[in-house]
Image (cartoon, rainbow, N blue to C red; front, side, top):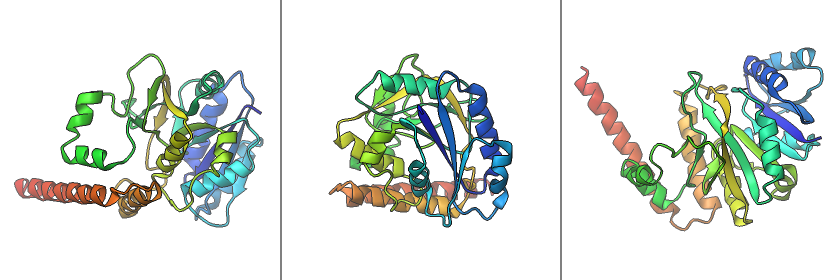
Length: 282
């Protein structure tokens, strides 16, 4: 088996169906399997998925331990040489999995690769980041991203190149293509992260082993975002803040307290900005 595609579901049955349809429609020239892990969704319609796609492996978890834990569970059933960790709210637009597979086969130092993600309107979406969270990045955000804008211009999180590019940061967890052997060596995602930053933390460990991260800009995938929760969800902001702090601690970043300080300043500035606009619009 060349590739095991793992999709974690939580109340997104229809999105999973549409995603899998594009996998079967677009994927050619390789042997692959599809593994769907349900994180104990209240909506049990996912249990009928095998009537639509008889060949898939459907894993019904008895608990919702988070995104990383769901992927780790799927990996236990995977037999592919590579894992393609794919969000349920995505649609493949081309033969992405074959492109990832062939690139990784000829690039021994590649730890992870991913493509360019698009919004539902086919506009650039968050696909990667050139840098991982740090004091420098937090200070940069406090300064309205002035430094990264100078360094990367309009290609901070999306690439307009025609060729693969190497980055020092991380590939978003929406389309995370990695060797199963390496994933197993690292014991998968750290399950202390319920949601968000699990791919960032794994990328940190990959980097420590000397592996590189690549973006294949010619691979295009639609990412709707927020499939299992809305962007306005209070939980989303809370999880992101907690996961970011946990990332600082996990990576032994002695300056995480200072980075957290800048993050709080950024949050305060955003609050003041919102209040200002509300007062102007009254």
